[in-house]
Each structure stands twice: as structure tokens, then as C-alpha cells.
Length: 158
Image (tube, rainbow, N blue to C red; front, top):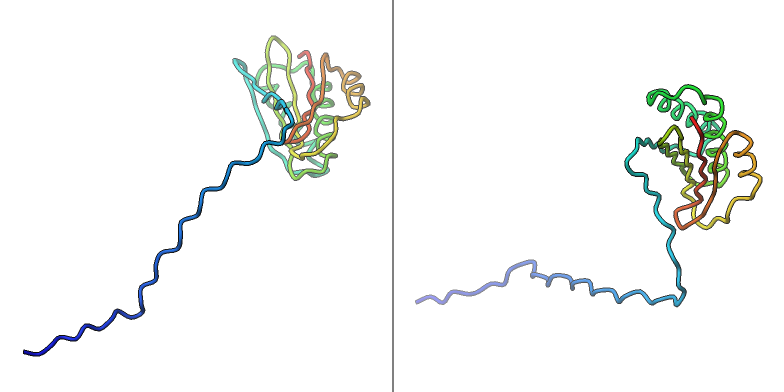
């Protein structure tokens, strides 16, 4: 009887790569940081737009906001709404991020307009912006900062 020779498989099989080890938990910094409350708008109509940071973004956002307010039946506060939206977006654009988001909501004949810069590491806006928002007709306004950028907002009677 003839002997059968066993030939090895070519190329030789390589073992599978090792599985990635689990990363250890991140160390605690020791600082008690309370996160900023996420903006929640419930039980009312809302709209939102994301715009690039450009010189024309404020005017474009103003047109979007006025169009939506007109759809909702508000036509009386065009000048104030346009001025507030443009100032809010110009303030967010000046932060130098890559994009700006604009949020609009209404309730009880009032409109909330918010601009978010999406650029982390900023300080709170100076009071001049808030004074100018008040002069443009805002019944309430404010600003705050967090990891996701600076948020500037105004409420307008419509």
C-alpha cells in the first residue's frame, strides 16, 4: 500500500487578531459640574433651521422665521421679529463656529427665538447684546453657555 503524504496548507493560516480590550472607566475629575438643562419646548408649534456661519446667515434666518410666523397667523410683529432674529444670529455667527442653529416656538401670542452657536469654550455674552435685544422689542431675553456653545434667546409679543 502506498503511503499518503500530508502536505500543509499554503499560505499558512494566521491566527485572528486579538480582541480589543475593554477600556477602563474614565477617571472622575472631582469637580461637581451641573449640566445645563437641555432646551425643551413642549406642547406648542416649533421650527428649527441649521445655517452655515456666513455674513448672509442672519438675513436668511430672518426670512425663515418671518415665513413661519406668517404661516402660524402672526403678521403684526414683522419688524421686531426680523430685527431680533438678525441680532440673535449675528451674535451666534460672531462666535466663529462652523454652524448656527435657529429655533422658533410660539405660545399664548408670544414667540421664542433662539440662536445657538455650536462653538464650545465661550464666555457669556456681554450685556450690550441683551440691552439691544430689549430695545428691539424683546419682552424677555437671555444668554448662557455650555459645552455645545452659546445660546442667545428672546421672547417677543406677536
